[in-house]
Image 1 (cartoon, rainbow, N blue to C red):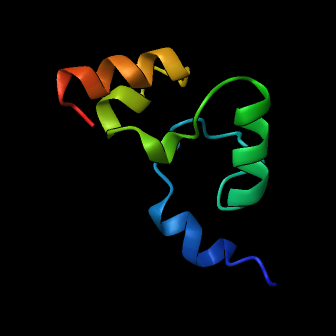
Image 2: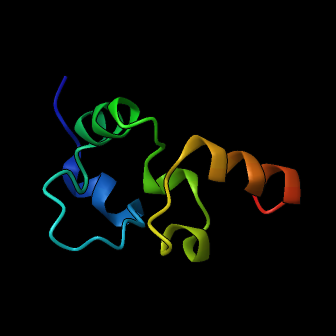
Length: 67
């Protein structure tokens, strides 16, 4: 399977500009799961900009109805 980086990057809301995984979703997901996190695309833009990608933060957002 070919990576669709050019398509993926148009939907990527990651605000960490030097990120080497932008648009390479399989690498991004693997990286964040190792850190007990979710990738930026799971979060609304305002929540993503906090750079808190933890499962716990995501769960709080779900409880608040923000996700």
